[in-house]
Picture (cartoon, rainbow, N blue to C red):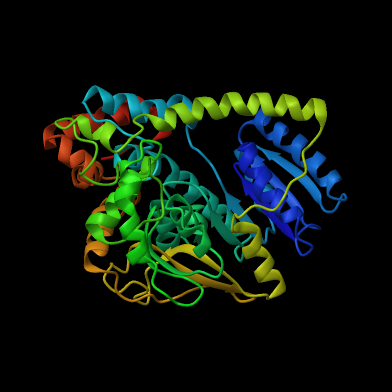
Length: 439
């Protein structure tokens, strides 16, 4: 079996996913093909993974492929393809995504999923995924593409609508959503045996049901504890707790993300909201700088002291592969196209995040039905932007980029239409060759 990792220069993530595969008896004998366009970063990943492979018993083998000219060979005959790329990296593209909008008074926290930053990231990445899909259709047409790259809904939606490649979008937030909520509210005694239902869109999927092991609804107690939580200066998950207060449900992704997915919290006319809701403006650039420095230190430490033992993480990728290979059923929260009315009050073109059953026949999304109307309405403010961004990438029409930015909840609430268009033009110019030409 062959497992190809696209963007393997993302060493920490490659280590987690490939390391997880090495922890599985069903997967550890695989050929692990590592692909990246950066030879130095790829070699760092190879060094770490070879040491990890030796520590795990020497099963399987590792191959490396550098550059576009070797991409088809990396993909050839693959059974699974994991995608974790960042087109344009932190420098220059993430810097551009934050600094250009800042000149117009538009502030962001993460900028990788929605907002003007998410739009530009999708427009940079979709052409690369199209190239991946074309190569896969030629050299591994039956492989399953496991996408971890953001903006998740836009990229996975594009792959599912405009390529023939079997694709599932994977995130980290569904696995920890209810656990984190109960822990934050000091309800750890309800963790064991709990039952939950999560559905919506990536980074804004809703914890629709949360019950204890005896089937009792936990939301009444959750809501009763929120006022005390909000009064504690040590806490910071205020945006999502505010979601529960005003929309009735908790959602999957963090304050760093959800603060910028709407028109409520980052408002230049109400600067006091930043402190009130503990909103970390410019969080992603800081995170990138810290991660780059932390990885340098960790890599040097590993070279000196050896590879630390890897314990299987809660990432879905290896468990999906294992389930398909062995036929043993496994349930995930996956990003899929909303065909068959999986969520009946969201459009069929939308990429939704719903429970999925995995077995020897692949990934099978489960129908959820209608979301609470207010939750569907919140999702639609994001879906509008996602669909227009995909349309812009497919048609190469600049008007659709303008429209996506105009309809973005945060951008549209802060800037007028003419200013939005000027900002988009400046971003396109600043990104240069990282973007295709638009008409």
